[in-house]
Structures are given as structure tokens and as C-alpha cells.
Length: 176
Image 1 (tube, rainbow, N blue to C red):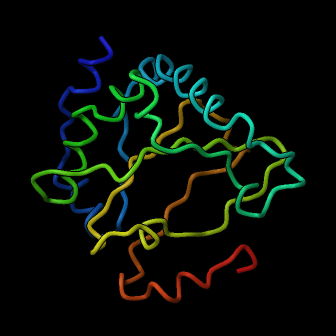
Image 2 (tube, helix red, strand yellow):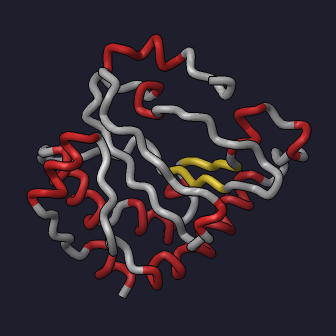
């Protein structure tokens, strides 16, 4: 069942594609069913625990950056279940449809956990720090667990920044 859901087609509308291309993001509904995310959540959690064991300092001893999230990357290289999830065709097809390209490459997978007492996440634009030659990049982000709205939203910035403005982005800090 999991493999079929991860590889199943997802129909993008012209409006969704145009919204993404105009604004730099789009919120798609029902891309991955909650039951599928729930099935993978334990694998992701256990692998993050394994990867971060031994490097978890108490919150108050961490840098501002390390307080924002507990993060672990390239989990697909460690856990076969996560590999199946990351390399699912459904997300890849959505990415190619939105960006208007024939194929995509994965730069990395990343699990981010907000911890109790952790810091806030400053405004930022990740793709400008990645070693790629252009801004035709995309992130598939989703929560493995539903949270109450009072815990905060997951906002996005409209496409208002040119790729050439990288230097000004690097000056953005948590004091901005």
C-alpha cells in the first residue's frame, strides 16, 4: 500500500501551476494521506534519534541556529523505509510539473523538529545557500503530525526576491 501511494499520480491544475510560478510556492492538499505520513513517522523519528544522539546539547547551551530546530539530513542513506519515501515518484512528478522541467534531482532530505523551549525560526530563504547555479529549485515540506493552529503557522514568502539579491539575503538575521 505505501509504495503505491508514494508513486501514485497527483493531478495538478493549471491554476496551481500558475500560482506556483507566479508566487514561488503553492499549498497542495492531500498530496500524502495522513495514514501514509503516520506509517513513516516512527521510521523518521527513530532515525533522527539515532543520527542526533550524542550531539544534543541542552537548549540553553545551543547557538541561535541550533535552537531553531533539531535537524538531521540525508536520512534516506540510513533507513530503507525513508529511502522509499524520499524517492517516491509522486513528489518528483509534482516537482517537475510545477517547475516545468523533465526531471529533478534531490539535493537532500531533511527532518526538522521543533523542540519544547527551542528558539524561533528567523525569516530565511534556503535555496540561496545551496550550491546550485539557478533558482529553479523546490522544497516539498509537510508535517508528519498535525498541530493546533495556536502553535503557529508555516508561512511562505511570495516571490519578491531575485536570485541576484543573494548578498542582501545573507545579512538577514534573527534580529531583523
